[in-house]
Length: 381
Image (cartoon, rainbow, N blue to C red):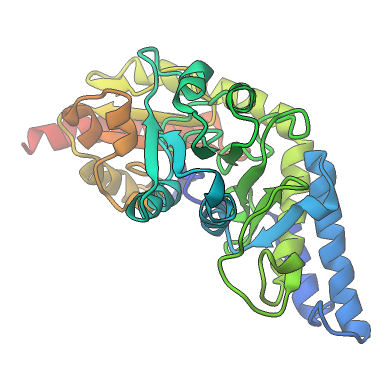
Protein backbone atom coordinates (compact mmCIF):
# COMPACT_ATOMS: atom_id res chain seq x y z
CA UNK A 1 0.00 0.00 0.00
CA UNK A 2 1.05 3.60 -0.54
CA UNK A 3 2.83 5.30 2.37
CA UNK A 4 1.44 8.78 1.80
CA UNK A 5 -0.45 10.25 4.77
CA UNK A 6 -3.49 12.46 4.25
CA UNK A 7 -5.04 13.49 7.56
CA UNK A 8 -8.59 14.78 7.10
CA UNK A 9 -9.91 14.33 10.64
CA UNK A 10 -9.00 17.65 12.22
CA UNK A 11 -12.40 18.01 13.87
CA UNK A 12 -11.52 14.97 15.98
CA UNK A 13 -8.07 16.25 16.90
CA UNK A 14 -5.20 18.18 15.38
CA UNK A 15 -1.46 17.76 15.13
CA UNK A 16 0.25 19.94 17.74
CA UNK A 17 1.90 22.92 16.08
CA UNK A 18 5.60 23.64 16.56
CA UNK A 19 4.94 26.82 18.57
CA UNK A 20 2.74 24.94 21.05
CA UNK A 21 5.17 22.02 21.34
CA UNK A 22 8.06 24.38 22.10
CA UNK A 23 6.00 26.30 24.67
CA UNK A 24 5.04 23.06 26.44
CA UNK A 25 8.62 21.77 26.45
CA UNK A 26 9.96 25.04 27.83
CA UNK A 27 7.41 25.06 30.64
CA UNK A 28 8.09 21.42 31.52
CA UNK A 29 11.88 21.77 31.46
CA UNK A 30 12.48 25.33 32.64
CA UNK A 31 9.49 26.97 34.36
CA UNK A 32 8.47 23.67 35.93
CA UNK A 33 7.46 24.87 39.39
CA UNK A 34 4.03 24.71 40.98
CA UNK A 35 2.26 27.98 40.21
CA UNK A 36 1.04 28.11 43.84
CA UNK A 37 4.54 27.85 45.34
CA UNK A 38 5.94 30.98 46.97
CA UNK A 39 9.53 30.58 45.79
CA UNK A 40 11.16 31.64 42.53
CA UNK A 41 10.29 28.49 40.57
CA UNK A 42 6.66 28.88 41.57
CA UNK A 43 6.64 32.52 40.49
CA UNK A 44 8.17 31.58 37.11
CA UNK A 45 5.31 29.13 36.54
CA UNK A 46 2.76 31.66 37.76
CA UNK A 47 4.08 34.24 35.29
CA UNK A 48 3.59 31.78 32.42
CA UNK A 49 0.05 31.09 33.58
CA UNK A 50 -0.74 34.80 33.83
CA UNK A 51 0.76 35.40 30.39
CA UNK A 52 -1.44 32.64 28.91
CA UNK A 53 -4.59 34.02 30.56
CA UNK A 54 -3.86 37.58 29.56
CA UNK A 55 -3.03 36.53 26.01
CA UNK A 56 -6.19 34.49 25.55
CA UNK A 57 -8.26 37.29 27.07
CA UNK A 58 -6.70 39.67 24.56
CA UNK A 59 -7.54 37.34 21.66
CA UNK A 60 -11.14 37.05 22.89
CA UNK A 61 -11.45 40.74 23.79
CA UNK A 62 -12.49 39.91 27.35
CA UNK A 63 -10.96 40.33 30.81
CA UNK A 64 -8.19 38.12 32.19
CA UNK A 65 -10.33 37.25 35.21
CA UNK A 66 -13.01 35.79 32.92
CA UNK A 67 -10.68 33.04 31.63
CA UNK A 68 -10.34 29.68 33.39
CA UNK A 69 -8.26 26.68 32.30
CA UNK A 70 -9.85 23.23 32.39
CA UNK A 71 -8.96 19.75 31.16
CA UNK A 72 -10.95 20.29 27.96
CA UNK A 73 -14.28 21.44 26.58
CA UNK A 74 -16.15 18.50 28.12
CA UNK A 75 -15.22 19.77 31.57
CA UNK A 76 -15.98 23.35 30.56
CA UNK A 77 -19.41 22.25 29.30
CA UNK A 78 -20.09 20.41 32.56
CA UNK A 79 -19.10 23.38 34.72
CA UNK A 80 -21.19 25.70 32.55
CA UNK A 81 -24.35 23.59 32.38
CA UNK A 82 -24.37 21.70 35.67
CA UNK A 83 -22.64 24.42 37.67
CA UNK A 84 -24.69 27.17 36.05
CA UNK A 85 -28.05 25.53 36.66
CA UNK A 86 -27.09 24.61 40.24
CA UNK A 87 -26.29 28.27 40.98
CA UNK A 88 -29.58 29.38 39.42
CA UNK A 89 -31.88 26.60 40.64
CA UNK A 90 -34.07 28.96 42.65
CA UNK A 91 -35.00 30.75 39.43
CA UNK A 92 -36.39 27.75 37.58
CA UNK A 93 -36.14 24.16 36.36
CA UNK A 94 -36.06 24.39 32.58
CA UNK A 95 -33.18 24.45 30.09
CA UNK A 96 -33.14 24.87 26.32
CA UNK A 97 -30.57 23.42 23.94
CA UNK A 98 -30.43 22.01 20.40
CA UNK A 99 -30.89 18.50 19.06
CA UNK A 100 -27.47 18.60 17.37
CA UNK A 101 -25.20 19.32 20.34
CA UNK A 102 -22.01 17.46 21.23
CA UNK A 103 -22.42 14.39 23.45
CA UNK A 104 -21.00 16.21 26.49
CA UNK A 105 -23.75 18.85 26.32
CA UNK A 106 -26.53 16.33 25.71
CA UNK A 107 -25.23 14.15 28.56
CA UNK A 108 -25.41 17.13 30.92
CA UNK A 109 -28.94 17.82 29.70
CA UNK A 110 -29.80 14.17 30.34
CA UNK A 111 -28.45 14.39 33.88
CA UNK A 112 -30.52 17.50 34.56
CA UNK A 113 -33.58 15.72 33.18
CA UNK A 114 -32.98 12.91 35.68
CA UNK A 115 -32.87 15.56 38.41
CA UNK A 116 -36.31 16.79 37.38
CA UNK A 117 -35.49 19.61 34.97
CA UNK A 118 -37.49 20.08 31.81
CA UNK A 119 -35.19 19.92 28.77
CA UNK A 120 -36.28 21.44 25.45
CA UNK A 121 -34.30 20.54 22.33
CA UNK A 122 -34.64 22.87 19.34
CA UNK A 123 -34.54 21.32 15.87
CA UNK A 124 -33.12 23.03 12.77
CA UNK A 125 -35.57 24.56 10.32
CA UNK A 126 -36.27 22.87 6.97
CA UNK A 127 -33.37 24.74 5.33
CA UNK A 128 -30.97 23.36 7.95
CA UNK A 129 -30.44 26.62 9.85
CA UNK A 130 -31.46 27.48 13.38
CA UNK A 131 -33.83 30.42 13.83
CA UNK A 132 -33.19 32.60 16.91
CA UNK A 133 -36.96 33.07 17.23
CA UNK A 134 -37.35 29.35 18.00
CA UNK A 135 -35.13 29.89 21.05
CA UNK A 136 -37.09 33.03 21.95
CA UNK A 137 -40.33 31.03 21.88
CA UNK A 138 -38.82 28.17 23.91
CA UNK A 139 -37.63 30.40 26.77
CA UNK A 140 -40.06 31.20 29.58
CA UNK A 141 -39.80 32.56 33.12
CA UNK A 142 -38.73 29.13 34.43
CA UNK A 143 -35.81 28.81 32.01
CA UNK A 144 -32.42 29.08 33.71
CA UNK A 145 -30.01 28.20 30.89
CA UNK A 146 -29.80 28.02 27.10
CA UNK A 147 -26.93 26.13 25.43
CA UNK A 148 -26.20 26.30 21.69
CA UNK A 149 -23.03 25.24 19.90
CA UNK A 150 -21.16 27.65 17.63
CA UNK A 151 -20.20 25.23 14.83
CA UNK A 152 -21.63 21.75 14.51
CA UNK A 153 -18.88 19.15 14.72
CA UNK A 154 -20.39 16.78 12.14
CA UNK A 155 -21.77 18.97 9.35
CA UNK A 156 -20.02 22.29 9.98
CA UNK A 157 -23.29 24.21 10.40
CA UNK A 158 -22.59 27.70 11.74
CA UNK A 159 -25.20 28.65 14.33
CA UNK A 160 -26.11 32.35 14.78
CA UNK A 161 -25.08 32.37 18.45
CA UNK A 162 -24.92 36.15 18.77
CA UNK A 163 -28.49 36.48 17.52
CA UNK A 164 -29.66 33.54 19.65
CA UNK A 165 -28.14 35.15 22.73
CA UNK A 166 -29.86 38.47 22.05
CA UNK A 167 -33.19 36.71 21.48
CA UNK A 168 -33.19 34.69 24.70
CA UNK A 169 -31.99 37.65 26.80
CA UNK A 170 -34.77 39.78 25.34
CA UNK A 171 -37.28 37.17 26.48
CA UNK A 172 -35.69 36.52 29.89
CA UNK A 173 -32.67 38.64 30.91
CA UNK A 174 -31.82 36.22 33.76
CA UNK A 175 -31.23 33.25 31.46
CA UNK A 176 -27.63 32.01 31.31
CA UNK A 177 -26.43 31.62 27.73
CA UNK A 178 -23.74 29.00 27.11
CA UNK A 179 -21.91 28.35 23.84
CA UNK A 180 -19.87 25.24 23.06
CA UNK A 181 -17.42 26.96 20.71
CA UNK A 182 -15.04 24.03 20.16
CA UNK A 183 -15.21 23.79 16.35
CA UNK A 184 -15.29 27.54 15.77
CA UNK A 185 -12.91 28.81 18.45
CA UNK A 186 -10.67 31.46 16.83
CA UNK A 187 -11.36 29.87 13.42
CA UNK A 188 -14.48 32.01 13.03
CA UNK A 189 -14.98 35.65 14.05
CA UNK A 190 -16.88 36.00 17.32
CA UNK A 191 -17.51 39.33 19.07
CA UNK A 192 -17.60 38.00 22.61
CA UNK A 193 -18.09 41.25 24.49
CA UNK A 194 -20.73 42.46 22.03
CA UNK A 195 -22.60 39.17 22.33
CA UNK A 196 -24.85 37.97 25.12
CA UNK A 197 -22.69 34.91 25.83
CA UNK A 198 -22.25 34.23 29.56
CA UNK A 199 -20.27 30.99 29.31
CA UNK A 200 -18.12 29.65 26.49
CA UNK A 201 -16.21 26.38 26.14
CA UNK A 202 -13.16 25.62 24.00
CA UNK A 203 -10.61 22.84 23.69
CA UNK A 204 -6.89 23.04 22.97
CA UNK A 205 -6.49 19.93 20.87
CA UNK A 206 -8.90 21.25 18.22
CA UNK A 207 -6.60 24.22 17.50
CA UNK A 208 -3.17 22.52 17.33
CA UNK A 209 -2.49 22.57 21.08
CA UNK A 210 -2.02 19.42 23.22
CA UNK A 211 -4.85 17.28 24.50
CA UNK A 212 -5.85 17.73 28.11
CA UNK A 213 -6.35 21.49 28.21
CA UNK A 214 -9.49 23.53 27.67
CA UNK A 215 -10.88 26.96 28.32
CA UNK A 216 -13.93 28.29 30.10
CA UNK A 217 -14.99 31.88 29.56
CA UNK A 218 -17.15 33.00 32.48
CA UNK A 219 -18.59 36.47 32.06
CA UNK A 220 -17.88 38.74 35.02
CA UNK A 221 -20.76 38.63 37.50
CA UNK A 222 -22.08 35.23 36.35
CA UNK A 223 -22.21 32.59 39.09
CA UNK A 224 -21.58 28.87 38.73
CA UNK A 225 -21.19 26.26 41.44
CA UNK A 226 -17.92 24.33 41.19
CA UNK A 227 -18.18 20.61 40.50
CA UNK A 228 -15.34 19.64 42.82
CA UNK A 229 -13.30 21.15 45.61
CA UNK A 230 -9.68 21.48 46.63
CA UNK A 231 -7.04 24.13 47.15
CA UNK A 232 -8.94 27.09 45.79
CA UNK A 233 -7.01 27.56 42.56
CA UNK A 234 -8.63 29.68 39.80
CA UNK A 235 -11.03 31.38 42.24
CA UNK A 236 -12.35 27.98 43.31
CA UNK A 237 -14.16 27.57 39.98
CA UNK A 238 -11.69 24.97 38.71
CA UNK A 239 -9.49 23.75 41.53
CA UNK A 240 -6.37 21.59 41.33
CA UNK A 241 -2.75 22.32 40.47
CA UNK A 242 -2.72 24.26 37.21
CA UNK A 243 -1.26 22.46 34.19
CA UNK A 244 1.05 25.34 33.29
CA UNK A 245 2.76 23.63 30.32
CA UNK A 246 -0.60 22.84 28.72
CA UNK A 247 -1.87 26.38 29.31
CA UNK A 248 1.28 27.79 27.72
CA UNK A 249 0.87 25.46 24.75
CA UNK A 250 -2.80 26.41 24.38
CA UNK A 251 -1.95 30.10 24.22
CA UNK A 252 0.90 29.56 21.76
CA UNK A 253 -1.41 27.63 19.42
CA UNK A 254 -4.26 30.11 19.86
CA UNK A 255 -2.01 32.99 18.78
CA UNK A 256 -1.20 31.19 15.54
CA UNK A 257 -4.83 30.36 14.75
CA UNK A 258 -6.05 33.88 15.51
CA UNK A 259 -3.25 35.50 13.49
CA UNK A 260 -4.00 33.41 10.41
CA UNK A 261 -7.79 33.29 10.72
CA UNK A 262 -8.61 35.22 7.53
CA UNK A 263 -6.06 33.52 5.30
CA UNK A 264 -6.98 30.09 6.64
CA UNK A 265 -10.67 30.68 5.96
CA UNK A 266 -9.82 31.73 2.39
CA UNK A 267 -7.70 28.58 2.03
CA UNK A 268 -10.56 26.40 3.32
CA UNK A 269 -13.03 27.99 0.91
CA UNK A 270 -10.81 27.01 -2.03
CA UNK A 271 -10.33 23.50 -0.67
CA UNK A 272 -14.06 22.97 -0.20
CA UNK A 273 -14.85 24.25 -3.66
CA UNK A 274 -12.26 21.89 -5.14
CA UNK A 275 -13.52 18.93 -3.10
CA UNK A 276 -17.15 19.49 -4.07
CA UNK A 277 -16.12 19.71 -7.71
CA UNK A 278 -14.33 16.36 -7.45
CA UNK A 279 -17.23 14.75 -5.57
CA UNK A 280 -19.68 15.82 -8.30
CA UNK A 281 -17.71 13.63 -10.69
CA UNK A 282 -18.17 10.47 -8.59
CA UNK A 283 -21.40 8.55 -8.98
CA UNK A 284 -23.42 7.83 -5.84
CA UNK A 285 -21.71 10.47 -3.66
CA UNK A 286 -24.03 12.87 -1.82
CA UNK A 287 -23.05 15.92 0.23
CA UNK A 288 -24.76 16.09 3.61
CA UNK A 289 -24.96 19.84 3.97
CA UNK A 290 -27.89 22.01 4.92
CA UNK A 291 -27.78 25.60 6.05
CA UNK A 292 -24.88 28.00 6.46
CA UNK A 293 -21.82 25.79 6.92
CA UNK A 294 -18.16 26.58 7.58
CA UNK A 295 -15.71 25.64 4.80
CA UNK A 296 -13.41 23.39 6.84
CA UNK A 297 -15.89 20.57 7.62
CA UNK A 298 -17.57 18.53 4.87
CA UNK A 299 -19.94 15.61 5.43
CA UNK A 300 -20.68 13.22 2.57
CA UNK A 301 -22.14 9.78 1.92
CA UNK A 302 -21.22 7.05 -0.55
CA UNK A 303 -24.31 5.10 -1.51
CA UNK A 304 -24.45 1.48 -0.30
CA UNK A 305 -21.02 1.55 1.40
CA UNK A 306 -21.18 1.70 5.19
CA UNK A 307 -19.08 4.40 6.82
CA UNK A 308 -16.81 2.08 8.78
CA UNK A 309 -16.08 -0.07 5.74
CA UNK A 310 -15.08 2.91 3.61
CA UNK A 311 -13.15 4.46 6.48
CA UNK A 312 -10.92 1.37 6.76
CA UNK A 313 -10.56 1.08 2.99
CA UNK A 314 -9.19 4.64 2.89
CA UNK A 315 -7.05 4.04 5.96
CA UNK A 316 -4.99 1.40 4.17
CA UNK A 317 -3.90 4.14 1.75
CA UNK A 318 -2.93 6.50 4.56
CA UNK A 319 -6.13 8.58 4.34
CA UNK A 320 -7.76 9.39 7.66
CA UNK A 321 -11.38 10.55 7.87
CA UNK A 322 -14.16 9.89 10.38
CA UNK A 323 -17.68 8.57 10.34
CA UNK A 324 -18.91 11.42 12.54
CA UNK A 325 -18.04 12.71 15.99
CA UNK A 326 -15.03 10.94 17.51
CA UNK A 327 -16.96 10.74 20.79
CA UNK A 328 -19.80 8.75 19.21
CA UNK A 329 -17.58 5.69 18.52
CA UNK A 330 -19.62 4.52 15.57
CA UNK A 331 -23.11 5.14 17.00
CA UNK A 332 -25.78 6.36 14.58
CA UNK A 333 -25.51 10.11 14.19
CA UNK A 334 -28.15 12.02 16.14
CA UNK A 335 -26.99 15.10 14.25
CA UNK A 336 -27.76 13.79 10.76
CA UNK A 337 -31.04 12.41 12.09
CA UNK A 338 -31.98 15.86 13.39
CA UNK A 339 -31.26 17.32 9.94
CA UNK A 340 -33.74 14.84 8.47
CA UNK A 341 -31.42 12.50 6.58
CA UNK A 342 -32.59 8.95 5.91
CA UNK A 343 -30.90 6.00 7.60
CA UNK A 344 -29.05 4.94 4.44
CA UNK A 345 -27.40 8.38 4.20
CA UNK A 346 -26.52 8.32 7.90
CA UNK A 347 -25.08 4.80 7.77
CA UNK A 348 -22.79 5.75 4.87
CA UNK A 349 -21.66 9.18 6.07
CA UNK A 350 -18.05 10.34 6.25
CA UNK A 351 -16.75 13.56 7.75
CA UNK A 352 -13.72 15.38 6.33
CA UNK A 353 -12.14 18.28 8.21
CA UNK A 354 -9.23 20.39 6.99
CA UNK A 355 -6.17 22.06 8.52
CA UNK A 356 -4.00 24.86 7.11
CA UNK A 357 -1.65 22.14 5.85
CA UNK A 358 -4.34 20.39 3.76
CA UNK A 359 -3.74 20.76 0.02
CA UNK A 360 -5.76 20.28 -3.16
CA UNK A 361 -3.42 17.39 -3.96
CA UNK A 362 -4.48 15.74 -0.71
CA UNK A 363 -8.11 16.07 -1.75
CA UNK A 364 -7.38 14.72 -5.24
CA UNK A 365 -5.73 11.69 -3.68
CA UNK A 366 -8.73 11.24 -1.39
CA UNK A 367 -11.17 11.59 -4.29
CA UNK A 368 -9.30 9.00 -6.39
CA UNK A 369 -9.26 6.48 -3.56
CA UNK A 370 -12.88 7.18 -2.60
CA UNK A 371 -13.93 6.45 -6.18
CA UNK A 372 -11.83 3.30 -6.20
CA UNK A 373 -13.31 2.26 -2.88
CA UNK A 374 -16.87 2.84 -4.05
CA UNK A 375 -16.34 0.73 -7.15
CA UNK A 376 -14.50 -2.04 -5.27
CA UNK A 377 -16.72 -2.28 -2.22
CA UNK A 378 -19.99 -2.19 -4.19
CA UNK A 379 -18.84 -5.20 -6.20
CA UNK A 380 -18.31 -7.11 -2.97
CA UNK A 381 -21.95 -6.72 -1.95
